[in-house]
Amino acid sequence: MSRKIWFAVSLLVVAGMALAACQPPQVQTVVTVVPGATVVNVVVATPVPAAPTAAPPKPAAPKVLRISTGADVPTIDPSRAVDMDSIQVVEDTSVGLVRQNPANAQVELGMATKWDVSADGKVYTFKIRGDVPWVRWDGKKVAKVQTCPDKDGKTKDRLVTAKDFQYGILRTLDAKTAAEYAYVLTPVIVGGAEFNDGTLTDTAKVGVKAIDDTTLQVTVKEAAAYNVNILGLWVAHAQPSWIIDGDDCTQGRGDRWTEPGFFQGYGAFVLKEWVHDSVLTVVKNPFWPGSDTLPVAKLDEIQRRVLDLSPAFAEFEAGNMDVSSVPSADADRVMADAKYKAMLSYVYNIGTEFYSFQTKRPPTDDVRVRQALSLAIDRESLVKNVNKGDGDVAPWYCNPGATGCPLPEKYPDLGVKYNPAKAKELMDAYLKEKGLTADKLEIVLMFNTSESHQKRAEAIQQMWKAALGITVKLTNQERKVYYQQRDEGLQNIYRSSWVQDYPDANNFMKDVFGNPNESFAKVVKWQNEKFQKLITDAARETDPVKRMAMYAEAEKILVVDDAVLTPLYWYRSAQLVQPYVKHPKSITGYEQYEKWDIVK
Image 1 (cartoon, one colour):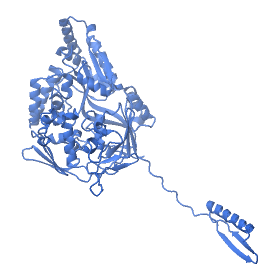
Image 2 (cartoon, one colour):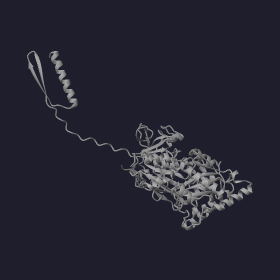
Image 3 (tube, helix red, strand yellow):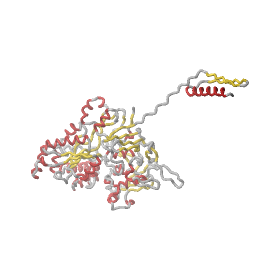
Image 4 (cartoon, helix red, strand yellow):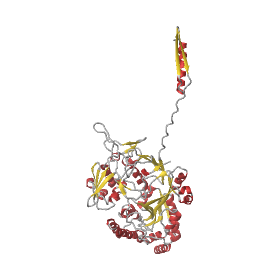
């Protein structure tokens, strides 16, 4: 073939390729051969339009729930979590032996498929499901955690075992962990208190034993109906020993194990991102197998942004937040708006807002001062005008939603009531005895930084000024610092809160005030022998009427006679939820987000 003819053919072929790239034509090629030359005839037919194809379906948008916290989550370590935000994330990313039904707070199965109790009520045997893997976020996706290679170099999925629960409970009890909430387990588990204070070092003598991979046995000191609730708490969740302490193939991360990149869990969600003081994100765990009580999550992701109440509400109004409480300044406007009223949801939590008095620091070391401060608070006005209807006035501390707590209809005269005249009489008597005038009295109220806490503190400050003629100084600290300073007891009054861990009066009374070195007993620095006997006997009492009467008598000592704390209100709050968010009601103070859904 001559070079010219070859070049011409090349151009035709290239042109044909270009056409093919745009729209495949029908091409007919005829080759005619004559002596000394080759002629190529190319006939291009009219292009045939391609058959239309259906557009691929758009992938469903991920279901992302956007919520807020007023401050950074302090920790997601089950052994160290003490506040509600921390506990919520622990519950999102791991599962206890048992858990609470959100609608009625009753115990139901978690990781345990069943449990048995010995005839004397002191040995609990839990059968644990053996199909749940440990998982982690690997930077791109949720991945199963693998065991160390065997002698053949093979690995397998790490499954949650009874040994992991044993490790978690012992780590909480271990004095080296310094777990504040260990005090809930120490009175219950045999050898728990001794292991916690260091007098017992042999863990084999602590009443927690993994019989095999799916059987956990726990021996308790005394039979009690609420023991199983305690053994299901977040402080008794399974924990990954290999990432905390290390093993043959994994570097132990110690206290840093909860940070992104290290964290491992096994709940309906797993930690994806945690930018401290900004956002904490968990994603759906595709390897959670689901159960009747804890289904596979419908949400793909939960984003928790650190925002105070007003900015969070502004984001809600802008469509950038899915759930929000209502700032008191906006409450009237929201209630008058039909659009918002349709989004309104009331949350009833078994918990109490109160102020704790430091009983060893002047002038709140004098019971008359504490009583005066308590009697001078108009709780009706606080709930109506400051909270804008959130909460129910609490004359005493123990929330009536918990079994055994006094009920208002049975004890209408119990507790502390607003009585400014009596309050002034008590305060004047104290000032006269001490040779002081009201303007010389130095009292400090401390609260953790929050817009709503500040509004309430300012309102109560004005009540004290109006009734008693005194000016109480207000001070606030970020949550982590606040908890530390509250325990140190350097101020007179502390903003305080208790939400049930399990729905029984024992959790409000004995767990909180039964040990002088733990919980709010440590904050108020107070003990009363009669009170201690009442709450100890009430914990063992099986007659519900007698038991409630004991707690009522204990309440009188706590909030009236000794005025160790002043109750403000029992929790009931309004929140706005976007209409496309579907969620079950919860009375426990915690949500089970795996049951939430977004339907747009």
